[in-house]
View (spheres, rainbow, N blue to C red):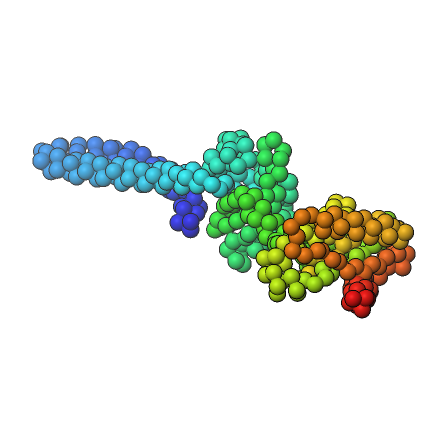
Length: 363
């Protein structure tokens, strides 16, 4: 990468040298021809033609060598220019652009058509603003980039690209500077797949693998956001802390596979009982938390009755080895006098265990 960047930097120098050499060449040729005529006449007048001929041959060889040297330099410069263009064009997956000091595009490979929909010739001599939703080439931005380039040699940042049809595309931009403040080289990389993977990984951190519900981390993140919304809209919340009864017995007697099945059955019951807008989470082994949003305290009995109906419907199915039984603690969160998420959980947890103890005492 450094090699072709240096070649791009030196191309202008080679062009200047070439023009200078050609100018010197034609000047020397003009003077040499005149000089040869004078020398030849001098020796011819003295009847020393063999010396004149020898000298003329020497000068001819000198001129031929000068022409050969000039052509060699020109050919090498042309080959290096083509090599640079080939390198740029050969990068198929990423867009490579060479920019001048002001952020104008002076060279671009054909990958820009595949990535952004523009032909390479469409973007030449234009500033890079039009291919970004985030402004990239205004003076302050470029000054910051060049300051970092001078310290570290390169700059990496993320931006939102703008396709020709005006749709966004996430990009990673890697910038190298050309020495002598001649400009910069930028590599534009499509990171759509990386972003999707990051979103999936982020989602995995918030979702319980077995049930597909929010896990403890996901619950706290969503619950905090919901509390703020409740405070702003002045609408209350109902929190249900639920524990599956006899879960240890199910695991120890029937096996953990059956225990997983019990967890999935409970999940199905919650999904049928609560609305899609409600927050359902598995925060422990057999512990679930549900937040009913935009709810009134009077709705508690209605929801609990609906929950019991779905439990009974699940237990009425044939060939069951056990019945689903749930202990529930419920707390109402008043938007005018809100509790924290931890306080809501603690209060609901205490009520849930109180109900569980009552069931044991009744037996």
